[in-house]
Amino acid sequence: MDPTAWVAILIICMAVVGVLRGVDVRLVLLAAALALGALAGDLAPIVREFLATFSNEKFVVPICTAMGFAYVMKHTECDKHLVLVLVRPLRYVRFLLIPGVVLVGFFVNIPVISQTSTAVCLGTVIVPIIRAAGFSPLAIGSCLLLGASVGGELLNPGAPELLTVSAKTGVPTQQMWRNILPLVLPILGVSTFIFWIVTVRAERKLAKLEPQPATAENVPTVSERINPIKALVPLVPLLLLFLSGPPLELISVPQRWMVNRPPHEPAAAVGGAAGAEALERKKDASANTRLIGLAMLIGVGLAAAAAPTKAKGCAKAFFEGAGYGFTNIISLIVIANCFGKGIEQVGLARQLGRLIAESPGLLHPLAGYVPALFAFVCGSGMASTQSLYGFFHQPALDHDQDPLEVGAMVSVGSAVGRTMSPVAAVVLMCATLTGTKPFDLVKRVGPPLIAGLTVAIALRVLGFV
Image (cartoon, rainbow, N blue to C red; front, side, top):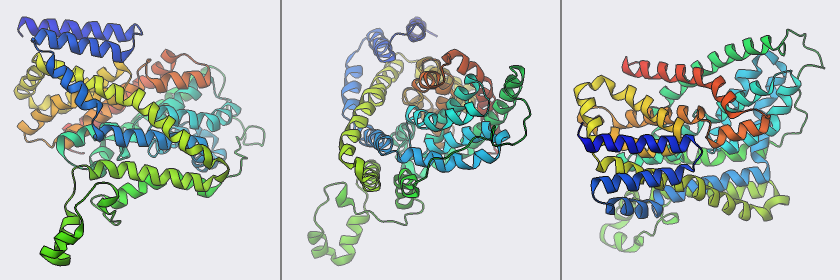
């Protein structure tokens, strides 16, 4: 490598040290991006990337509306009722509490794409149940963390990581579940199984988990009454997106609800009803992005109807969530894009492309492990995907690899790295809810997650998924 590349690596290493020392990740990555731009002799691309991403509706609309929806779910307690439905069977199978809680967290994280919101929602219901069953705070916190952050949100078309891949490939996010699912399931299964074994052994050593007969005293209960309508509301936007998007397309949503289309009359005058229908079938570039926002707004309306006593606060909760999404997610996307542009300018992306060209078999392992490492450092799976996917997109095309498959690998690797990061918001939240230390939670979930990611990469390399 030339001297410029070595200086760039030094700048990146300094950024890593800054993040690990607790400096705000946005400040660190922006400073690094500007330094890389200066090293390349041109700061203009960094500034352009900042402004373009800051105003890009492909990220702002779906992410902010999804976070607004998550806040409304919390305000109306619809998410709590969904958790109660999923947790209720666990009171009969005490020995399955650990994997059960992880799976409940995984499923709740699909409609509630925020890992932190998922952890809070789970914590209010799960913590008393597991504590009553005799598990230690470390076991409880790590269960919450693994379930809330292992990658459930990647099955939601509104997930920020999928939007990044969609922006590069032009493929609607509704179609990406078929690329994500074969990778998420091995990671979920392997990491949960290993985590279960490790936790049971650790609890036995602490004398916290001893064989007990199933009695009324030690079987956890869920006594709160469940409202089935509230429990279904969090699933509505998810169902709408899957039913209206490819490949199902069972529901047709008129595009005039999302974009300003030319009136049908001129088209009908020229081509009749067939012309008007053809115009409607022609997808607008913004329609898929805004469809996610529309689905979230419909969910907000249903939540207000399901909880009429709290309806007056739904609008405030929605915009508070949207503001949180812009502050904590969009801002990271903006800075991550700038950081990625800086890396591209100094030529490190070309170095990665050459490495993959020399050893094509490294494409998927690098696409999994490198984003995981970056997410571990910065605490954000979204920032990792946004910064790094572009570096793997072109090599995938060059080697006749499906860029969607590579994007799926980058996304799940980023999710794994975030879950193992002591500076991730979801890790800090789980530690706060259970009175544990973030590093202790990371040490408990880290090895199972690495094993799960390794299995997923091996399956992909061997052609099984």
